[in-house]
Length: 92
Image 1 (cartoon, rainbow, N blue to C red):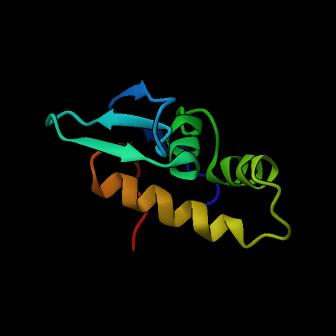
Image 2: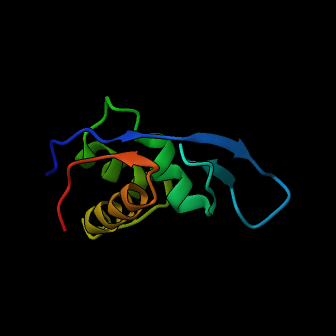
């Protein structure tokens, strides 16, 4: 699972004037407001980075200790996949 390279889907619109970092629209036209942490994961998944690499970057960005953030990133990727905002083969 850590070697999988998920790829974001959808179009983003950045928003500097609210508590959300951006709005992302999936291929069905459904729009989602994403907070900073979730938007960071969505944006980082470019199809070239592994989940492990994204988790490491996530930990660095938000100054997290240990490896607990790996499972957090996996959970975020699964949620984004369920919203049709991520191409991923991760299983529940």
